Amino acid sequence: MKRPVRTTLVYGLISALAVMPAAWLFAGPIGWPMAFKLALWMDLFFYTVLLARWGGKSLIAIVFPMALLLGTALWPGVYSGFFFLGLGVFSWIRSGICFSGTPVRAVAAEIITVAGGAGLVALLGPGSTVTWSIGIWLFFLVQALYFFIVPATDPSDTVRTVEDSFELAHREAQRVLDEGMAG
Image 1 (cartoon, one colour):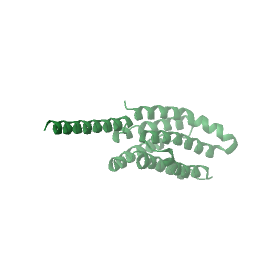
Image 2 (cartoon, helix red, strand yellow):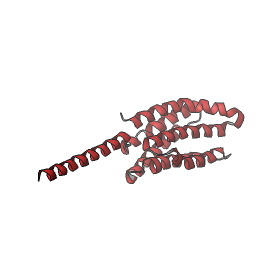
Image 3 (spheres, rainbow, N blue to C red):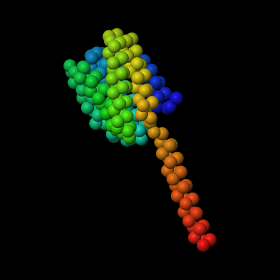
């Protein structure tokens, strides 16, 4: 199993177990709706940090989209807009910032995974803490499919490619020098 897939599955399980208790902790001082939105925002923030690291991008690249989503999370009375903007920001960061190498595949992968994940959550109809936890787990379960559709590049692969091309150039230069001295 590839590292981003495995980590997404584990992160999804941790998220399913941690988001609701985090929302309960925040609910006392700020109220349940905003606490739940902030808990989801924090969950998405930590996952986008992982995405940025996997994509080899600076964390600065995710600041604007996440600040935009935080503003929506803090805006009172905005609930469905927060969820839809969250899905958009998630797609923007994943396919537009972190893994922007294959645009057609990325768009197809985003449509399949984001719509599929959101559709499963909506189909589940979360209303209690248990169903929200299951919905979060299902969402991340579907998100793991993204890395099967659009494979993440391993930074060690690019290093190997650079080393291989350097070695090839070195051998070619050595061959040219050897032929020059023999002739």
